[in-house]
Image (tube, rainbow, N blue to C red):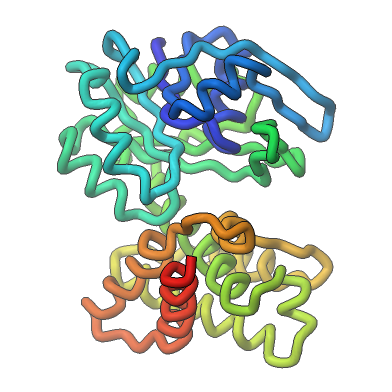
Length: 304
């Protein structure tokens, strides 16, 4: 299977490297700065087991040739419009597109551009970041990759994707209910991002602060009410596990949005929090805590 990995940051770099190491034909679509970095030093993975380096196949938008069987999109959500332009001529009659982005707005955006039958569901669970020198740093052994048809019909096309991905040295989950997995990932990451960005700290600091637990539970409840109104079929055991994970004061957690904010980078405010507020308004739901988070993030973006 010919695979195009759009992005070579922490997510794309890690999972793309594992696919390449498993023998898949993987090309990384990257911007000029990342292209030069990877050309010079290779794709470096720093994992709990040690450091690995591989020489990746690279392309830029103006050098991308041919069509691909699978395009995995791993860029920040605010870069999606440009990436759609970059990959357009690499999409053939049988190409499937699997976005691994935060939130859910990107699914409709990709479907409108390339067609509903081309876009499949995907998400990952990994604690990873990109070092200053471009090294992909996997901070814990967690490396799960979920995928499946958005309508649950995992036909022969999806079976082929599974055959390519399941032997890539990561924990793969071929799901027949990927939409619920996507809703639950959004519940987790948006709660985490909201409380960390609003409080400017990790979950351990928040939970051990006066009112911190109430803040986290309040944000969680607002987000759960929004996604339920939007079609999430609540799985009580799953949502309880998410809240339990977030509420553990012994484990300090931060979100990628918070880490980007503390470094002065652009953030996925509209895609992670803003979109929830638009959906809440559609159902006349009161979300005062999310509104406070959104104002906070808008002010940050104005001041950048």
